[in-house]
Length: 202
Length: 202
DNA sequence: TAAATTAGCGTACAGTTGTAAGCTGAGTTG
DNA sequence: CAACTCAGCTTACAACTGTACGCTAATTTA
Image (cartoon, rainbow over all chains, first blue to last red; front, side, top):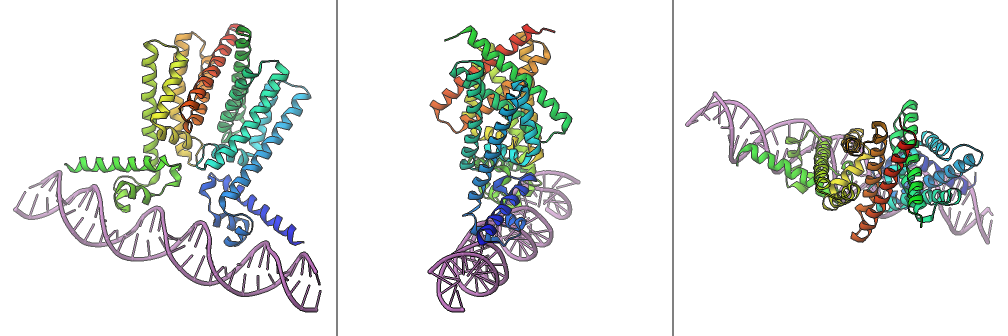
């Protein structure tokens, strides 16, 4: 194995180790460099060959999480295009995502309100992508004016993420209930913004 | 000063110290017993005369925060009763609260998605009070059926808390903008649930 | 007033942390 | 092949952690 390959492999095992530790209810700021190194099977000081410090690793993890989130969006779009209600499909896709990638979503959720301003900003940016994407869709498909669509999209994303937080530690049955619940709430918002627009079109 | 008085005073200074440390971007799990003791001006080991461990202190802090939240609700109700739109008054009151008690709100926000299951549960319970209270109001005042009102109340509380998170680190101008934004979003929801009810009354 | 209680302190210890310094051996390059 | 590079290692250290143990001095109780 070439030197570069080996390095990439070790780097990945550090990232995997961090996600592993994150899995058992911990924040980025609550896991230590030595723990990560231990989990990754390297000496503590070898960590520095790959990351300047834990913060740099943290930002890398947030980036990876953001990547997963964007893949989620693409998947949702594809499923919507091939038929099915927008709200139902979106929520279902989202719930499948947080079930399959619970550690990724947990990371985003925790660090969104977490200790590090840098992480908070990074997560907010990823969520903003999500919101932008949704508002574009609303504008194009539902023909709702831009400023209303933006507010609607933001509300919807916030509700879905909030429901996702509840679903994170729920079993399949509770998850289904949470899904139905948030779907109804999203319909309220959609109805509401439509009603608002028809009442005061500008 | 009696022994009991002195003890209460020291206990309070421990609580104050913890809130102080919480003020500078930290989680409960990220502040150490020794730091709290230092800030409170007592010896590390004296801490144990008042709390079994940091977790017990943490739950105490969450309780205090919940108390503040309930006072906020009472204040909002009073202001609504003495005239003014429900949404406007509620949001304004809430924003004033998180400005004046930013550390309290930050605690709730962080620990709501935090590391400790016990804290998460405690915070969720406090937020649930909030939601229950609001849905009662919606049922009584707006005559909306129970199950719809519950969904509406939950959506609203989630949006307001989510907006509060953004407002936490915003200046006065940005805060005002966030307020206006969330007020509109709350109106969407209200319109939506009303429309839903009139469309499918049961 | 004598005895009992107890809030707070000082000392101590084992465990963990981040990271500095320098070595080694294997892959890379000329 | 010789020189170089560099990922990963071992050792080391100072800082910090939670908390056990026992003392003191002042209040409370009998």
